[in-house]
Structure formats: structure tokens, C-alpha cells
Image (cartoon, rainbow, N blue to C red; front, side, top):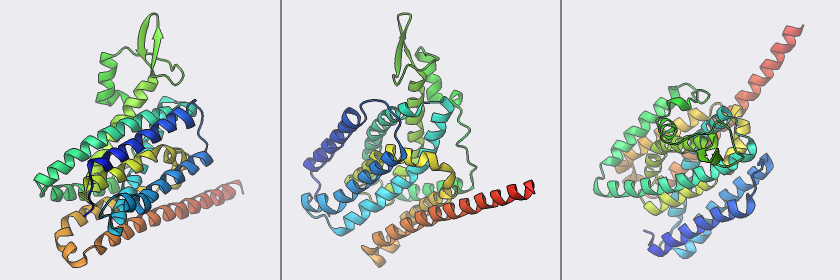
Length: 329
């Protein structure tokens, strides 16, 4: 059992705040389009930072941190990051619906993710307290994840049917705040005829935040299915969310290549839900190796779904070329 103190919580929180300050204040101070290569580099930086924390920083600063804790952290990180991919595709549809220029998207994602970090912290804290007092809630979460995974597997692709006018939070914002019909650069507010108005970019931010709330209802139970240690849940969640902006710019232009990823994510949810239900019987039998097995299964599911997506997409593209040639002949 790792000995987590208030100093560890404070140190990690300080690191997050410093990383966010450097991100917006230094590296992305001016609105501009984030290119694929730059986004890929930053995705690698955040992933490397997460691994550095799990296997170098934490073992040297947290008494009792063992390799099992590192494997648990990585499993939680991968689960959160993989479930965030579905969120990325929805955010891309939101930006497309509102015709948000690429140069302004990073600012929306920054503030959206800042809000997500605060909300996840509250949800994780509440979840840890509830699980500690009512352990049986884990079985409810497990059943919920199995149901959610099955629903995701057989549900249609609803990403393109973004309907802001049906979003209750957007309705409330429009009702209580005066709105501008035009963007004012990357500002969330604008001044017209002596009045302060919210810009459409503010509505985009509201939709991004509310979308994250919906996805958190799946990801938070899923990560508690990996571990009930609040520090591991929070740190793996935060690292995944910090890398979400760069991951967005990597994946947004490649959405069509991962058509089977949805099925992989649904299987991950079903697997974690089943593990939560069966853990009282599996843990005495497998011991600490249960976490390593879980990590291998999660990684395997994600890799297979992504590779299968690329292979299937390539075959479809080749079939389309052949069909076009036959039509011309």
C-alpha cells in the first residue's frame, strides 16, 4: 500500500497548474492552428510524462510504491485515454457544426479541459467516499459498465447529429444571457452597443463541457473498476485529460480511419465491468497478476480495434477505387 500524504496531493496539483500555465501562457499564447506534427509531438510528450511519473517519479517520492501501482496507473491511464477518443470525435462534430476556425479550437479545448479537471476531481472524490462507505456500489458500477458497453456496441453513430438547440444547458445559457450571433475572434464575450454579450464560441465551450459530463459518467466508473485508490484514479485521469487537447488535433483529421474503435471501446467497458463483478473471486486466485492481465487485455483490445480499423478502411478504399474504375470502363 503506497503512503499518500497531503504533500503528494499538493505536489501533483502544483505540477498540473504549472503545466496548464505554461501551455496557455507560453506555448499557445496566440491563437493559431495546431498542425498534425506538433500535436503528435505533444501527445508523445504527455504520454512520456505519464510513464515517467508512474515508473520514475512516484517510486522515488512515494513510500510503498511498487511495480503493481505502476501497472495500475497505466491501466487507468489507458482506459481514460481510450474512452476520451470517443469524446474527441464528438468535439470535432461540435466544432464543425459551429464552424469554429482551427486557430480558435485550442483555446476552447484548454478552458474545456480545465473545467473537466475540476469536475473530475469532485466526481472522483465523491466516488471514493461513496465506495469506501458502500462497497456494494462497485457491483452496481460493474453492471452499469456492462450495460453501457453493450449499448455503445449496438448504438448508431450519432456524432453528426449535434443539436445544440436541444441541449438543456445551452437553452439555459441562451435564456439567461444575451448572445451575439457572430464570433469576435477567440473571445467568449463581446461588447456591442454598450452591452456585454456571449459569443457563439461561449456556446461551443458550454457544449464541450456538458459533453465531457456525459462521457465522465462512463469513464469514472470504469477507472474505479481498475482501482479504488483515489490518488491513482485522480493522477491517471488527469494525465489522460492533459493529453486530450493534443490527441484531439491528432485524431480529428483521422476520424474516418478508426471506424471500428467504437467496438473496441465498448469491449473495454464490458471487460472492466465484468472484472468488477468477478474480482472477489479472481483476486484470491490471481493476486497482483490480475492487474497485469487486465492491462494486457485492455491494450490488446485497443490495438486490435485500431489495426482492424486501418485494415478495413484500406480495403474499403481499394474497393471504392476498383468500383470507380469499373464504372468508367
